[in-house]
Image 1 (cartoon, rainbow, N blue to C red):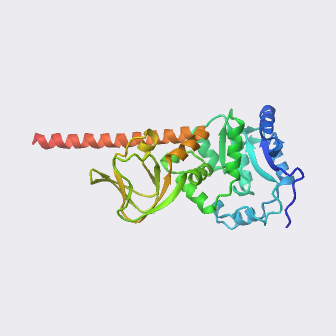
Image 2: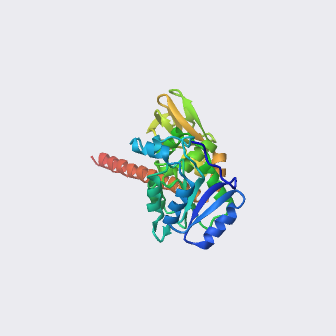
Image 3: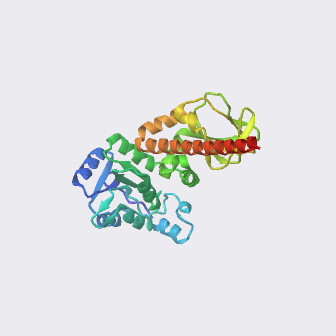
Amino acid sequence: MEERKNESGLKKIIVADISHTVRLLVKKYLEGAYDVLEAKSGQDVFSILAKNHACDSHCLAGLRSGKGASALPERNSSCEWKDVEMIILCMEFPDGAAFEIAEKIRKKFHSKCLPLLLNTSSNKREIINTALDCGINDFIVKPFPKELLLSKIRKLERDIPLQDLEQSELIAKIPTFRGVPPSQVAFALSACGKTIKKKKGEPICEEGEENFDLFILLEGKCNVLYQGKKVAEINPIDTIGEMGFIGEQKRSATVVAAEPSKVIVLKKDLFDEYLNEERAISETICKNIIMSLNDRIKKSNDMVKKLKIMAEEYLSY
């Protein structure tokens, strides 16, 4: 079916918010770049979609196949028409919370076809995790500047291959990225990372070197060596080099591939630029890294205590 033309020539974005002030502010931010459709309730959102967005034909077919959201096709010409680019949702409406509305939308529209951006005053991990579980793509913490909103929108507009999204959904579950939307993980990997392959015995990083990049092991297995002795193993999917990344310290150990391995390298300088742009994401990732390092220190201290007790028992005989 032939795609309908938008009379204004601009992509449409629904700004759904109970606050008239917020709707006006976002409309001003997007003026000239997007055609803003205002909604004050969940019912308004679905009324606007019924009139402006009928591209659920392939989305529904995918859902009925039972393959799940990650198996649905990308936006394509099988849509009847797609006039709405995305929806910006506030947390609460008179007729339901954003989470409930998001779940209803996801019963009809694929997340790649109709992205949802949550406008929230909190970036608490439990709120963000619930939002992601309900099908919301990303979040923005208010008050936010125009530049950040436009950046978020353009990142969601970017077509990312499904296999990259599936990989990002997996990486978003590891401790370093917990609470970061998969769409943001996908963008960060695309903008700041590259995938490399290592043969058995090849180093990922070496003790004493000034390399502050962050590594993510996708496939294979790595050994951690300290002064030439194996002290730990790293398995998929896990990160390597958090201490150097956050504190710019020289590598404290060598990491080598124990078998053929695939690794994502997140370049420190590029990732820093991304985090400076995404302050809420930056705070989440830094907290995650600190908590992970804290857990490792606790485990090390527990091990030292056990060894001390064993040594004392041995010496008492």
